[in-house]
Image (cartoon, rainbow, N blue to C red; front, side, top):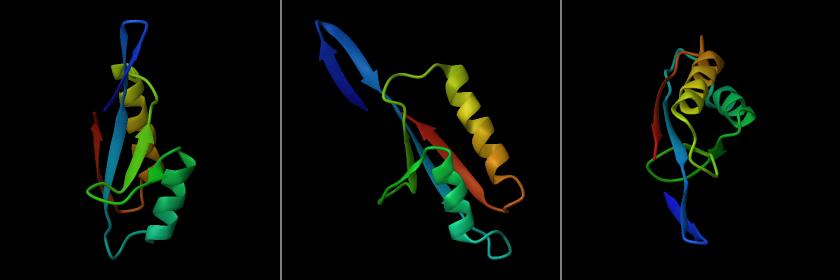
Length: 86
């Protein structure tokens, strides 16, 4: 989480991290990643696979909608995923 201070007001930039687990009988990693990138996620290295940078503090409804959109995007591809927003 990145914190900015503007004129004494604290602003928080939040990010949603995505981890994907592939299944050998499912879609190819290239197909899955292409769909994720089209949603605005960016690939990263390390503990997580992708990052969605909100650039601000999203509402709970916005975070849930992102999860719903990801769920629909990955439906039928036989992958498991985990989202973490911090």
